[in-house]
Structure formats: C-alpha cells, structure tokens
Length: 164
Image 1 (cartoon, rainbow, N blue to C red):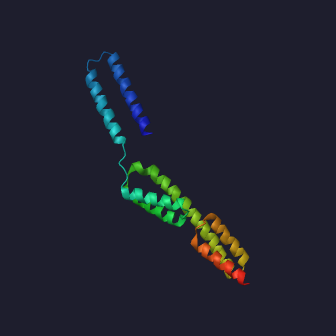
Image 2: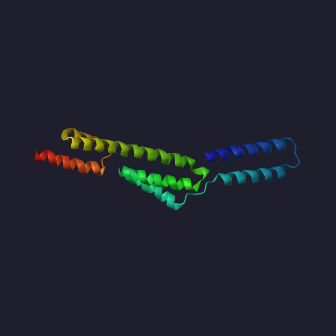
Image 3: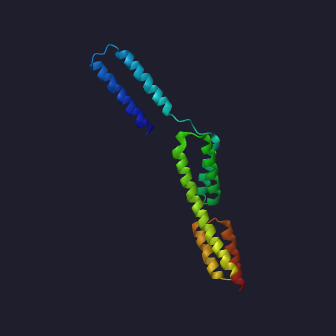
C-alpha cells in the first residue's frame, strides 16, 4: 500500500511538472525542486519505525505457543504483546494490533471451550456419571489436545473405570 502511495505521488508530481513545462512557465526548475522536495518528504514520512525488539519477541513467542498447540500460553502471550503494543501508542501499528487481537480471541475461545467441557466433566464425575464425563473430556481434548487438566482428569477416570 505504501508503494502505491509513492507511485501516485510521483505520478502526480510528474504530471504537474509536465503541465508547467507545456504552459511555458519560466520557473519550471524551481517548481521541479519544490515538487522533488515534497515527494521525498512524503516518502520518508511513510516509512514506519520498526517495533521494539521486546515486542517482536513477545509476538514470536505467542505464535510459537500457538503453533505448538499450547493455546493457554499463546493466549497469555498474545495479551502481553497487545498490551505492550498499545503502550507504544502509534497509529502505524493498528493493523498489527487488529491481527493480534483476532489471534488472542481465537486462542481464548479454544481455551474457554475446553474449560467448559472440562467443567462439565467434573460435574458429571461428581454425579458418578463416568461415561458421560469421559465423553466431555474427550470433547475438551478434541478442541485443545494439550489441555493438561483434561488430560489428567481423563487418565483418572479411565483408571477408575478399569477398577470397576
């Protein structure tokens, strides 16, 4: 998108210069210098400042957790990256902030759904409805395969089933 703006600005400047030359303006060189200066300043202003390395590392950590299926850790890491990015208070980071918020929401929904199934399973276990509890835990693990509380509870329930 920045490249398109640069191209448009340069094309407009060239068109203006051509019109001035065709009109026989005696100050064409001065106008050309002015246009060149303005174009260069616009191009320089569009180059965003790089993000601090600390924030880049936070984002990389969140993405690594997500790729490993560690959604709870990814959710926390995305939230930390979002907070750090918001503290920068820069307009040029809005698209990145929107992307991070979307990723955070996605991980939060995964974790929340797995927790809900785990909670249901714990209630069913309390009611000694072990088969249904196992089904709920399996649903939790379909959503979030590395959700440790569900893994532990499933192992416990399966051991109880074997004892009966």
